[in-house]
Image 1 (cartoon, helix red, strand yellow):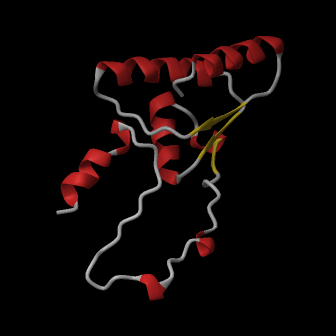
Image 2: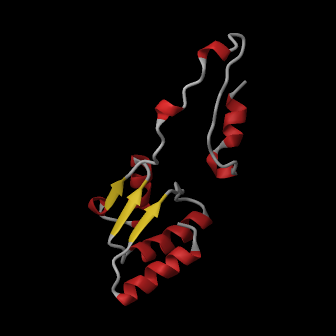
Length: 120
């Protein structure tokens, strides 16, 4: 949603008559100036897209609202993680400690600051 190259490519493909599919991984707000600007750009860019894929139902709802899309033109395909491959070994667990594992980019908008505040 924030890639200028993606927006340019969507417009070029639209002009050339190519079908396009946009994949959105972003959750973005509605109230601050940056959100308002980006949502207007997204609405414009996605107006000519044939289909949109989001990685969660929450992401789909967010994208549909931000870009004023028909929900029927948006599909949900979750990120592929086989959770059966990620079980800790119970014999190595320390009963005196709690282990929290987070898999995410360490950027402010992902809420790592909130996790740090909540842990105590």
